[in-house]
Length: 355
Image (cartoon, rainbow, N blue to C red):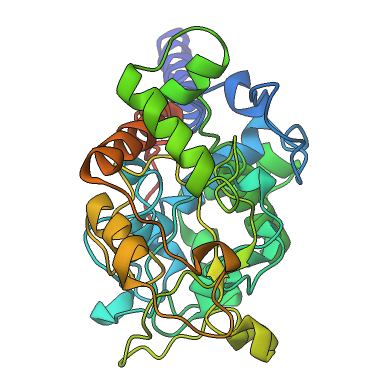
């Protein structure tokens, strides 16, 4: 009997150890960053964020990170948020001019980069969403993107190993709701702060521009700073920058949302940070290189009633001036942000309970 008792005790001990190991593994897979993610820091010269950066817990951020990278959010489990918003492209993508969805569906716009969202009141190229908590519903439910319903996502998450633990850690119990899913996605996306490019280190007195970069900075302040305002390098407005209408897409931008004539051909002014990683450029990805963009502003502007006043005369630069301004724009690349391990794919997203 004593021998049997020892065996039983040993089995219980091993089982308990295995349970603790699994729990630790789950925590390891999804808890890389500790307090780093919650304690979001940005330079003193940044404006006040629109969203509170300290309202989410570590576990809510980590749940959002898992969801962001999980194709379970799409109808056929093939497309995740990261499919169009790759961390190595400043959460944009360079594979296609236009976004791709399930069944190789082609979207109508270039996937915008996702960083410094905490300062954005309007989201998407046409400002169709005015709050990050609901923005994810647009790609999730769009038939040409993820083509899924929140109800189906909830049912799939209930069957997928690991998510009960993630939701319980994030919210105190394992109930999975649409509000919790969307709040978690917001929590993760608010951690995507790009604020350590060479430009930022110059502002903090840690580095200096080269002569060419400084020349480009001066040109930028003269020709570009009205719309691409420092330090976020966008004024978050909508503008018509003189692009010819694509005959196939027939995209009139902000007008699609408001139906107001004065909004025809207006698109959201994007940030110029991380341009080396976010090509192709413009709402439809028509330009592959920065030189193409500068050539457009010099001689390609199409004039219309809603054209931005700053572009009425175009922006004409010499070859040397173009080289200088591009040299400055490259100082806005933030490699620390691009290669931050705390925002990458979280290893260990579980398997279905049925598997």
